[in-house]
Length: 239
Image (cartoon, rainbow, N blue to C red; front, top):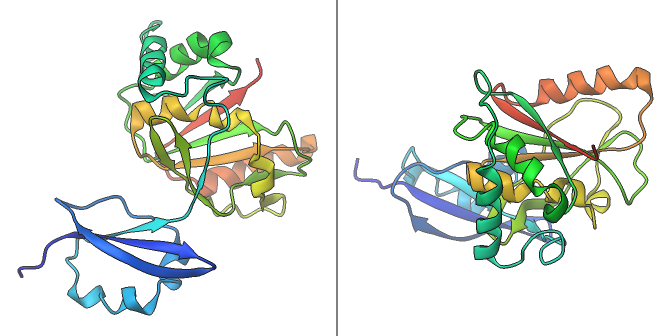
């Protein structure tokens, strides 16, 4: 019908969505599929819907979660970080049978654990996943239950940003808590590997705080129910 696909970029500002323009796109792009996005779009965007190509997708600009480990726990320069990650990913062991749905990766500085992390992530290289869910212990804040990022839209790394997908976890111990992620290394240290392997794949980040043994299975089931079918789970570990 003569319409061309576009990528409409929407900016969240002071709780309101403002259309920040659009740009031509060669084809469909990844949609931010959080249901609340459509409900809160500015009228200036909604009125455009009848005029847009069916392949149009919505980008949502949100706060970026800046890295705090770059230059200390892993290289700050893009070229140096790419070289380090690629070197670690070449340290392969025997490939697994089939595509793993979960891996355990360390979260120390790359000088200490990069080689082990590389072997872990090499096991999923070439796998096809819809999203990644990183589950890590919280180190610097008091958290009862589990915490997800609340207002940030992407994790920033020197090699690019990884979009954040907040899971709709139906459990009373699942909370949104940006503060829990401040100065927290256990999630950030995994992001460069994910970015290098899977590009802009959505990443769900969950920090685990104080949980009673009898609460574990219920939380695990709630996380699984909120995740997409083809999710890679990354357990970020001290061991």
